[in-house]
Length: 97
Image (cartoon, rainbow, N blue to C red):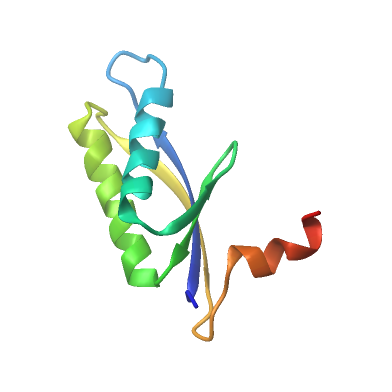
């Protein structure tokens, strides 16, 4: 079982003040390619895995956005770390039909 949930909202600057959604899509693509369990929500994406692995994914997300042309990124991150294990499913099962 994973020991960490990490939720991230990336807020990329755009070179011309344009739409940031294509940059957000690039960040989510990094998560998809990582192979970790994740859920995309309207205002953030939550990943499930080991703390060090998830932090490396965050770093790769930022690198991908810079490579895509963003001059800077602000990310809001929430981390729930439980050495004995934690999962998105366990935390939300009582709210699912």
